[in-house]
Image (cartoon, rainbow, N blue to C red; front, side):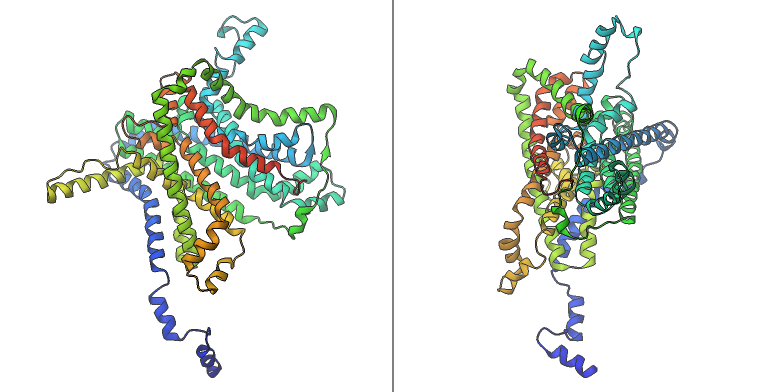
Length: 573
């Protein structure tokens, strides 16, 4: 056997000799790829490290006040809000996905993509619109008073939108598409075979749903709800405007109102533990149950939907339309009405500056995130080592960080960097550099790049996984280097995925509010902060034009996604 082993080692392409393997272990392949991936990972984790450092370096004098007066109420409110939003988005997302997949009713095909439209509306815009729509002077209460002849608010009771439940309604209205999208895909694809088997045994559609498809879809539902909860924790505009004091709002109030950076960092760390708990629960729920379709040809099947006729059909249409009207119709109606009365806002220099700043930061962020995502994926593809895979996973953790936490942690890092550089330049060159990154547009771009690189990486990776696994190796067998094969073979095929990633990052950066508020320089406004500033002084109508521009900017990729969902003729159920 030893002679055979030596013979194999001597053959071209055989097992490398022991000394060659020892050399390879000491000099790993693509060392520069490993180093750059590690640097990217450390940059992403720097805000977390800085938060921990600031939180632990304080005197602790604010901690008794936080424990006694801030954390109990803010924690209870946050958990209550998360519970309501999870229940609301889970119910609406699953119910609407099942309706458009299992039943045939009027306008079903249109509603199947229209149900995604609320994703184009940022939560803070929805909060401003809901407040204007449902408050005393809004159209709903005005109609209600006229219908029953009430003269003042003392004559009747009406639900208050400025409550935790009202905030949950607002967030659920614009976030349920996350659950709808993930669940609908499972209902269309993964549950097809077992659903057909259940039908052949005489099970009714409702029984198939409760006993078969719902358990199968549980990992997808949990994944969608986890995304919803992450966005809920990240929210600052909606909660603050509606007077709901969550942990995120408490971070800002502790820092700005009390002037306690350490206290804000300590609350942020508690929020970070909550984020990791959500991610852990989501990972456990997804790993505990896995279902796989047996054959791809089953996707070609066309089992019939249950046709709802007459009043039942129109009732289904009404139920499926309500989420669209709440999450998309109300904001467009309110801000469209305000904007139509203030058409001069579209020509204002302030709006033009905010739009240019938004386009500039979003474009640069999209370019950086796509570049980093391509590099990280190429590193995993070429090195194929566990340490690189773990490093890339850690580099994608930024999307799990709420914008407020990320912005606060990055602010400490940038301030320390600027101060250290200024001290060095003063001591050695008698020259002050001032603040280079702190309070600059660069800080916003860095924060958004850290947060959304995972979004770009996921979009491009999904496109890469659809390509044959050995595609670029064919080019390498013809003498191309790994870099040349990636550029000449993979990049052209990945253009749709790269474009999708760039558009998604652009839109999310344009909508980002939490990190932008913390890191923007003086006199620098984006469309999001322009709307926020007007809403903060109880005049959201003055930001109507900016709100419409934000919605239109986000609507383009959302409509493209929605139209793609409508083309499901080979995957109907």
